[in-house]
Every structure is written in C-alpha cells, then in structure tokens.
Length: 85
Image 1 (spheres, rainbow, N blue to C red):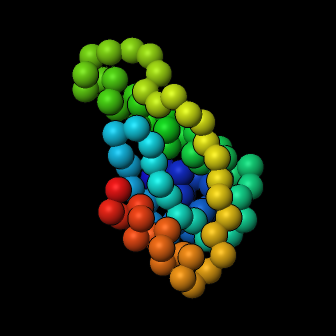
Image 2: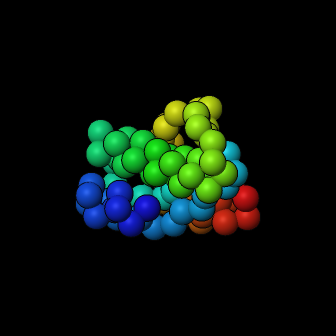
C-alpha cells in the first residue's frame, strides 16, 4: 500500500486486506492511477503470499473495481464495513 501511495500520489484514508480481496478508501476520483495502484497492490500481495506458501498462480479471482462514495454518513459506513470485515 505504501509503494502504491508513493508511486501514484494517492491519499489513502483506510484499507484492509482480507484473504480474498482488498478494501481501500482513497480521496479523489477513481482514475487510471487508482486502477494501476489496485493492480500493483494485488500483484504484490499475491507475490508475497505465493513466496510464503511456495506456490504459483493467481491469488484473487476478481479484478479491480471502484465504487464512488458520497461523503459523511456513507463514508463512515464504508469505513466501518471495511474495518469489520
């Protein structure tokens, strides 16, 4: 996450990595930079897992997708959901 934040200049508000996906909240519009950051994060996590388990191949099935979050209560709910996952 740190590398993606540095490389793509993202303002990361919150994130959680689960066994099969990542939730991350960033400030600003979903852009090509945020898509590339998502791919970088997923790739690095998969590499680390595969090295630890001495395996190869895909780690997560689904690809990156973004959801626009309004503000205030919607943001609070999304943050709470990701932290309780």
